Image (cartoon, helix red, strand yellow):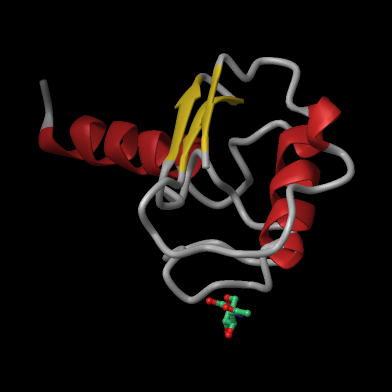
Length: 98
Ligand SMILES: *[C@@H]1O[C@H](CO)[C@@H](O)[C@H](O)[C@H]1NC(C)=O
């Protein structure tokens, strides 16, 4: 394969996998609220209270399948506060450890 063709394909792959958010918007919303409900702990690296991309940015403790959040494992991190009021949005969640 020509080098130029390879470069174009790499560029396309980077464009498709980066830039725009990979994570389902309902899942992002629920994790934003969860984060603020737990007093925005700095232990949760990569987490943000507005938007963000939990699956694409490897938020600590989050595992995804495709664009959906499937597990949240936050035990042993000294977190406090409450769960979010809209955890029900996480319809693909199969495991929650806090
Ligand atoms: C709860 O956790 C937050 C973030 O880690 C921290 O700033 C706060 O001091 C903690 N509050 C209590 C009562 O432990």
